[in-house]
Length: 108
Image 1: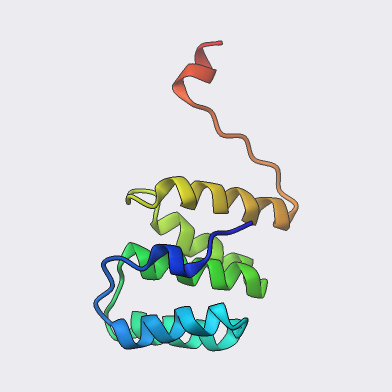
Image 2: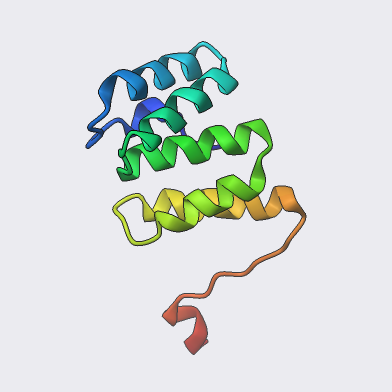
């Protein structure tokens, strides 16, 4: 299960739209949350927290291509572990099997 947007509320500069998106998500209004998060992004906010939350909303709405795109942008941020986890969920929902190898696994 994907994490909730409330867990990722740091470093957002467009607080009103971000906060409204989090509140909409909490109330189960995913389409409304998407609108607020996209509005914050269009206003120039591209923080990892906003992008992560937008990816979660896309995933829950079934927009797997958009979710994948957003989670891929987070692989070089502090949200990378959650991004990898959610990318796995996206691939699973798409019916695609993917294997991730670490340098330790490659040596075995």
